[in-house]
Image (cartoon, rainbow, N blue to C red; front, side, top):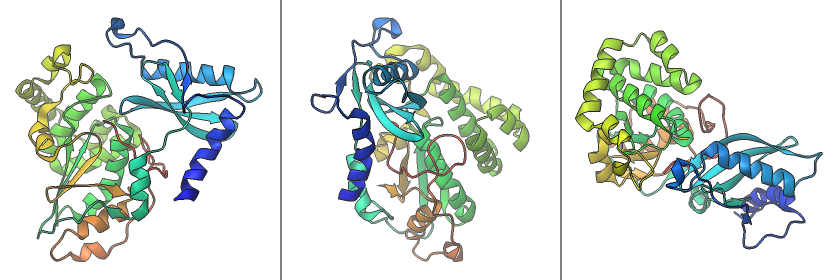
Length: 328
Protein backbone atom coordinates (compact mmCIF):
# COMPACT_ATOMS: atom_id res chain seq x y z
CA UNK A 1 0.00 0.00 0.00
CA UNK A 2 2.80 2.40 0.95
CA UNK A 3 4.61 1.70 -2.32
CA UNK A 4 1.45 2.49 -4.31
CA UNK A 5 0.93 5.82 -2.53
CA UNK A 6 4.58 6.78 -2.88
CA UNK A 7 4.52 6.03 -6.59
CA UNK A 8 1.45 8.24 -7.03
CA UNK A 9 2.88 11.15 -5.08
CA UNK A 10 6.43 11.34 -6.44
CA UNK A 11 5.58 12.70 -9.96
CA UNK A 12 3.61 15.61 -8.56
CA UNK A 13 6.33 16.30 -6.02
CA UNK A 14 8.57 16.96 -9.02
CA UNK A 15 6.11 19.52 -10.38
CA UNK A 16 5.72 21.38 -7.09
CA UNK A 17 9.40 21.23 -6.12
CA UNK A 18 10.60 24.53 -4.75
CA UNK A 19 7.09 25.97 -4.51
CA UNK A 20 5.70 26.83 -1.08
CA UNK A 21 2.15 25.59 -0.79
CA UNK A 22 -0.21 26.04 2.14
CA UNK A 23 -2.10 22.90 3.08
CA UNK A 24 -2.16 20.84 -0.11
CA UNK A 25 -3.62 23.36 -2.48
CA UNK A 26 -2.71 26.46 -4.42
CA UNK A 27 -4.70 29.69 -4.69
CA UNK A 28 -5.24 30.53 -8.35
CA UNK A 29 -7.47 33.60 -8.28
CA UNK A 30 -11.15 34.39 -8.12
CA UNK A 31 -13.96 32.20 -9.35
CA UNK A 32 -15.49 32.36 -12.79
CA UNK A 33 -18.57 34.25 -13.84
CA UNK A 34 -20.02 31.80 -16.31
CA UNK A 35 -23.73 30.91 -16.08
CA UNK A 36 -24.47 34.61 -15.74
CA UNK A 37 -22.78 34.67 -12.34
CA UNK A 38 -25.39 32.31 -10.91
CA UNK A 39 -23.02 29.56 -9.85
CA UNK A 40 -19.57 31.08 -10.15
CA UNK A 41 -18.50 27.87 -11.92
CA UNK A 42 -16.13 27.80 -14.88
CA UNK A 43 -16.67 25.33 -17.68
CA UNK A 44 -14.33 22.31 -17.59
CA UNK A 45 -12.25 23.72 -20.46
CA UNK A 46 -12.01 27.19 -18.89
CA UNK A 47 -10.94 25.78 -15.53
CA UNK A 48 -8.38 23.47 -17.15
CA UNK A 49 -6.88 26.26 -19.24
CA UNK A 50 -6.62 28.47 -16.17
CA UNK A 51 -4.87 25.70 -14.23
CA UNK A 52 -2.43 24.98 -17.07
CA UNK A 53 -1.61 28.68 -17.37
CA UNK A 54 -0.93 28.88 -13.64
CA UNK A 55 1.25 25.75 -13.66
CA UNK A 56 3.30 26.95 -16.61
CA UNK A 57 3.79 30.47 -15.26
CA UNK A 58 4.45 29.61 -11.63
CA UNK A 59 5.64 26.03 -11.36
CA UNK A 60 7.61 25.14 -14.48
CA UNK A 61 10.38 26.56 -16.59
CA UNK A 62 9.84 27.97 -20.09
CA UNK A 63 11.67 24.97 -21.51
CA UNK A 64 9.52 22.44 -19.72
CA UNK A 65 5.87 23.42 -20.11
CA UNK A 66 2.69 21.49 -19.36
CA UNK A 67 0.02 20.82 -21.95
CA UNK A 68 -3.59 19.75 -21.47
CA UNK A 69 -4.58 16.21 -22.49
CA UNK A 70 -8.14 16.04 -21.19
CA UNK A 71 -10.52 17.35 -18.53
CA UNK A 72 -13.68 15.94 -17.02
CA UNK A 73 -15.92 16.32 -13.99
CA UNK A 74 -15.21 14.21 -10.95
CA UNK A 75 -17.73 14.89 -8.24
CA UNK A 76 -17.47 18.50 -7.08
CA UNK A 77 -14.19 19.23 -8.89
CA UNK A 78 -12.60 18.97 -12.33
CA UNK A 79 -9.90 16.38 -12.99
CA UNK A 80 -7.31 17.48 -15.52
CA UNK A 81 -4.82 15.24 -17.27
CA UNK A 82 -1.63 17.06 -18.20
CA UNK A 83 1.59 16.19 -19.96
CA UNK A 84 5.00 17.52 -18.95
CA UNK A 85 7.76 16.32 -21.22
CA UNK A 86 6.83 12.72 -21.94
CA UNK A 87 5.12 12.14 -18.59
CA UNK A 88 1.40 12.34 -17.85
CA UNK A 89 -0.03 13.54 -14.52
CA UNK A 90 -3.45 14.00 -12.97
CA UNK A 91 -4.32 17.21 -11.13
CA UNK A 92 -7.56 18.69 -9.86
CA UNK A 93 -9.07 22.17 -9.93
CA UNK A 94 -12.12 23.52 -8.12
CA UNK A 95 -15.07 24.37 -10.35
CA UNK A 96 -14.82 28.06 -9.52
CA UNK A 97 -11.22 28.08 -10.78
CA UNK A 98 -9.89 29.19 -7.41
CA UNK A 99 -7.98 26.19 -6.09
CA UNK A 100 -5.55 23.85 -7.83
CA UNK A 101 -4.81 20.51 -6.18
CA UNK A 102 -1.59 19.08 -7.66
CA UNK A 103 -2.48 15.59 -6.47
CA UNK A 104 -5.52 13.73 -5.24
CA UNK A 105 -5.75 10.40 -3.47
CA UNK A 106 -8.94 8.40 -3.97
CA UNK A 107 -9.33 7.04 -0.45
CA UNK A 108 -12.04 4.64 -1.57
CA UNK A 109 -9.78 3.19 -4.26
CA UNK A 110 -6.91 2.84 -1.79
CA UNK A 111 -9.13 0.95 0.64
CA UNK A 112 -10.43 -1.30 -2.13
CA UNK A 113 -6.92 -2.04 -3.40
CA UNK A 114 -6.36 -4.23 -0.37
CA UNK A 115 -8.41 -6.78 -2.27
CA UNK A 116 -7.88 -5.82 -5.89
CA UNK A 117 -9.76 -8.70 -7.44
CA UNK A 118 -13.10 -8.64 -5.70
CA UNK A 119 -16.47 -7.05 -5.21
CA UNK A 120 -17.34 -5.17 -2.04
CA UNK A 121 -19.34 -7.49 0.16
CA UNK A 122 -20.56 -10.99 -0.53
CA UNK A 123 -22.74 -11.10 -3.64
CA UNK A 124 -26.11 -12.83 -3.07
CA UNK A 125 -26.68 -15.96 -5.15
CA UNK A 126 -29.59 -16.88 -7.42
CA UNK A 127 -30.38 -19.32 -10.22
CA UNK A 128 -30.30 -16.48 -12.76
CA UNK A 129 -28.39 -13.45 -11.46
CA UNK A 130 -29.83 -10.01 -12.13
CA UNK A 131 -27.10 -7.58 -13.19
CA UNK A 132 -27.74 -3.86 -13.58
CA UNK A 133 -25.14 -1.25 -14.49
CA UNK A 134 -26.15 2.39 -14.01
CA UNK A 135 -24.25 4.93 -16.11
CA UNK A 136 -24.22 8.35 -17.73
CA UNK A 137 -23.54 7.81 -21.42
CA UNK A 138 -20.69 10.36 -21.62
CA UNK A 139 -19.17 9.76 -18.19
CA UNK A 140 -15.58 8.52 -18.79
CA UNK A 141 -15.87 5.98 -15.97
CA UNK A 142 -19.35 4.89 -17.06
CA UNK A 143 -17.86 4.20 -20.50
CA UNK A 144 -15.04 2.28 -18.85
CA UNK A 145 -17.54 0.14 -16.96
CA UNK A 146 -19.53 -0.52 -20.13
CA UNK A 147 -16.36 -1.71 -21.84
CA UNK A 148 -15.92 -4.10 -18.92
CA UNK A 149 -19.60 -5.08 -19.16
CA UNK A 150 -19.92 -5.87 -22.88
CA UNK A 151 -17.65 -8.97 -23.15
CA UNK A 152 -19.36 -10.45 -20.09
CA UNK A 153 -22.80 -9.59 -21.47
CA UNK A 154 -22.00 -11.36 -24.73
CA UNK A 155 -20.82 -14.41 -22.77
CA UNK A 156 -23.60 -14.64 -20.17
CA UNK A 157 -26.62 -12.80 -21.60
CA UNK A 158 -28.54 -16.08 -22.01
CA UNK A 159 -27.71 -17.19 -18.47
CA UNK A 160 -28.17 -13.96 -16.49
CA UNK A 161 -30.47 -10.94 -16.73
CA UNK A 162 -28.08 -8.14 -17.71
CA UNK A 163 -28.93 -4.57 -18.70
CA UNK A 164 -27.70 -0.98 -18.90
CA UNK A 165 -29.66 1.58 -16.88
CA UNK A 166 -29.22 5.31 -16.37
CA UNK A 167 -28.34 7.50 -13.41
CA UNK A 168 -31.27 9.87 -12.87
CA UNK A 169 -29.32 13.06 -13.53
CA UNK A 170 -26.77 14.10 -16.14
CA UNK A 171 -23.44 15.90 -15.89
CA UNK A 172 -22.31 16.15 -19.52
CA UNK A 173 -24.77 18.44 -21.28
CA UNK A 174 -27.63 17.97 -23.72
CA UNK A 175 -25.68 15.45 -25.79
CA UNK A 176 -25.80 13.10 -22.82
CA UNK A 177 -29.59 13.37 -22.63
CA UNK A 178 -29.82 12.60 -26.34
CA UNK A 179 -27.47 9.61 -26.13
CA UNK A 180 -29.14 8.26 -23.00
CA UNK A 181 -32.45 8.34 -24.86
CA UNK A 182 -30.99 6.62 -27.92
CA UNK A 183 -29.50 3.83 -25.84
CA UNK A 184 -32.62 3.48 -23.71
CA UNK A 185 -34.83 3.10 -26.78
CA UNK A 186 -32.53 0.81 -28.76
CA UNK A 187 -32.35 -1.47 -25.76
CA UNK A 188 -36.12 -1.33 -25.37
CA UNK A 189 -37.15 -1.67 -29.03
CA UNK A 190 -34.32 -3.70 -30.61
CA UNK A 191 -32.54 -5.39 -27.74
CA UNK A 192 -30.71 -7.78 -30.07
CA UNK A 193 -28.91 -4.82 -31.66
CA UNK A 194 -28.08 -2.97 -28.45
CA UNK A 195 -24.72 -4.59 -27.68
CA UNK A 196 -23.52 -3.99 -31.25
CA UNK A 197 -24.60 -0.35 -31.16
CA UNK A 198 -23.06 0.19 -27.71
CA UNK A 199 -19.78 -1.39 -28.77
CA UNK A 200 -19.66 0.84 -31.84
CA UNK A 201 -20.53 4.00 -29.92
CA UNK A 202 -18.01 3.31 -27.17
CA UNK A 203 -15.28 2.81 -29.74
CA UNK A 204 -15.99 5.78 -32.00
CA UNK A 205 -18.41 8.13 -30.27
CA UNK A 206 -20.12 8.51 -33.67
CA UNK A 207 -23.76 7.74 -32.97
CA UNK A 208 -24.90 8.59 -36.51
CA UNK A 209 -22.38 6.22 -38.06
CA UNK A 210 -23.22 3.52 -35.52
CA UNK A 211 -26.97 3.79 -36.13
CA UNK A 212 -26.34 3.26 -39.83
CA UNK A 213 -23.76 0.52 -39.37
CA UNK A 214 -25.97 -1.50 -37.01
CA UNK A 215 -29.07 -0.74 -39.11
CA UNK A 216 -31.11 0.48 -36.16
CA UNK A 217 -34.76 1.06 -37.05
CA UNK A 218 -34.81 4.83 -36.77
CA UNK A 219 -38.59 5.09 -36.94
CA UNK A 220 -38.97 2.81 -33.93
CA UNK A 221 -36.18 4.58 -32.11
CA UNK A 222 -37.47 8.11 -32.73
CA UNK A 223 -41.03 7.12 -31.82
CA UNK A 224 -39.74 5.64 -28.57
CA UNK A 225 -37.58 8.70 -27.86
CA UNK A 226 -40.55 11.06 -28.30
CA UNK A 227 -42.78 8.93 -26.08
CA UNK A 228 -40.09 8.51 -23.40
CA UNK A 229 -39.26 12.22 -23.45
CA UNK A 230 -42.93 13.06 -22.94
CA UNK A 231 -43.51 10.38 -20.28
CA UNK A 232 -40.64 11.53 -18.08
CA UNK A 233 -40.69 15.25 -19.01
CA UNK A 234 -37.00 15.06 -19.84
CA UNK A 235 -36.72 18.02 -22.22
CA UNK A 236 -39.21 20.00 -20.17
CA UNK A 237 -37.10 19.58 -17.05
CA UNK A 238 -33.90 20.32 -18.97
CA UNK A 239 -35.37 23.65 -20.05
CA UNK A 240 -36.48 24.47 -16.48
CA UNK A 241 -33.35 24.94 -14.38
CA UNK A 242 -35.42 25.19 -11.21
CA UNK A 243 -35.85 21.39 -11.47
CA UNK A 244 -32.14 20.63 -11.76
CA UNK A 245 -30.50 18.60 -9.02
CA UNK A 246 -28.70 21.00 -6.67
CA UNK A 247 -29.33 23.64 -9.32
CA UNK A 248 -26.56 22.11 -11.48
CA UNK A 249 -27.64 18.81 -13.00
CA UNK A 250 -30.69 18.17 -15.24
CA UNK A 251 -32.86 15.21 -14.28
CA UNK A 252 -33.10 12.06 -16.35
CA UNK A 253 -35.89 10.05 -14.79
CA UNK A 254 -36.25 6.88 -16.89
CA UNK A 255 -34.94 4.77 -14.00
CA UNK A 256 -35.50 7.01 -10.98
CA UNK A 257 -37.44 4.25 -9.19
CA UNK A 258 -34.42 1.96 -9.42
CA UNK A 259 -32.02 4.79 -8.55
CA UNK A 260 -34.01 5.34 -5.37
CA UNK A 261 -34.26 1.63 -4.60
CA UNK A 262 -30.50 1.06 -4.82
CA UNK A 263 -29.31 4.47 -3.66
CA UNK A 264 -27.54 5.18 -6.94
CA UNK A 265 -25.27 8.20 -6.54
CA UNK A 266 -23.05 8.16 -9.60
CA UNK A 267 -21.78 6.55 -12.79
CA UNK A 268 -21.01 3.69 -12.75
CA UNK A 269 -23.10 1.96 -10.09
CA UNK A 270 -23.27 -1.82 -10.39
CA UNK A 271 -26.03 -3.89 -8.80
CA UNK A 272 -26.04 -7.71 -8.71
CA UNK A 273 -29.02 -9.53 -7.22
CA UNK A 274 -30.25 -6.29 -5.63
CA UNK A 275 -26.91 -5.53 -3.95
CA UNK A 276 -24.65 -2.64 -4.97
CA UNK A 277 -21.13 -3.96 -5.56
CA UNK A 278 -17.82 -2.29 -6.27
CA UNK A 279 -15.87 -4.06 -9.00
CA UNK A 280 -12.11 -3.61 -8.69
CA UNK A 281 -10.30 -3.95 -11.02
CA UNK A 282 -12.74 -3.14 -13.82
CA UNK A 283 -11.61 -5.90 -16.14
CA UNK A 284 -13.97 -8.21 -18.06
CA UNK A 285 -12.46 -11.27 -16.40
CA UNK A 286 -12.89 -9.93 -12.89
CA UNK A 287 -16.46 -8.81 -13.64
CA UNK A 288 -17.22 -12.26 -15.06
CA UNK A 289 -15.88 -13.95 -11.91
CA UNK A 290 -18.04 -11.76 -9.69
CA UNK A 291 -21.20 -12.48 -11.70
CA UNK A 292 -20.38 -16.18 -11.84
CA UNK A 293 -20.05 -16.18 -8.06
CA UNK A 294 -23.68 -14.99 -7.95
CA UNK A 295 -25.01 -18.20 -9.57
CA UNK A 296 -26.30 -21.01 -7.40
CA UNK A 297 -24.85 -23.31 -10.06
CA UNK A 298 -22.40 -21.48 -12.38
CA UNK A 299 -22.90 -22.35 -16.05
CA UNK A 300 -20.20 -23.80 -18.27
CA UNK A 301 -19.58 -20.34 -19.78
CA UNK A 302 -18.00 -19.28 -16.50
CA UNK A 303 -14.97 -21.42 -17.32
CA UNK A 304 -14.16 -19.24 -20.33
CA UNK A 305 -11.35 -16.79 -19.63
CA UNK A 306 -11.86 -13.16 -20.67
CA UNK A 307 -9.39 -10.28 -20.79
CA UNK A 308 -7.91 -9.22 -17.46
CA UNK A 309 -6.84 -5.84 -18.86
CA UNK A 310 -8.63 -2.77 -17.50
CA UNK A 311 -10.17 -0.56 -20.21
CA UNK A 312 -9.21 3.10 -20.11
CA UNK A 313 -11.89 5.63 -19.09
CA UNK A 314 -13.66 7.46 -21.91
CA UNK A 315 -14.35 6.66 -25.56
CA UNK A 316 -12.08 4.26 -27.44
CA UNK A 317 -10.88 0.75 -26.72
CA UNK A 318 -7.50 1.58 -25.21
CA UNK A 319 -6.48 -0.08 -21.94
CA UNK A 320 -5.57 1.78 -18.78
CA UNK A 321 -5.03 1.17 -15.08
CA UNK A 322 -7.50 3.25 -13.06
CA UNK A 323 -10.48 1.39 -11.63
CA UNK A 324 -11.79 3.76 -8.99
CA UNK A 325 -13.22 6.79 -10.75
CA UNK A 326 -16.85 7.81 -11.08
CA UNK A 327 -19.04 10.71 -12.15
CA UNK A 328 -21.39 11.82 -9.44
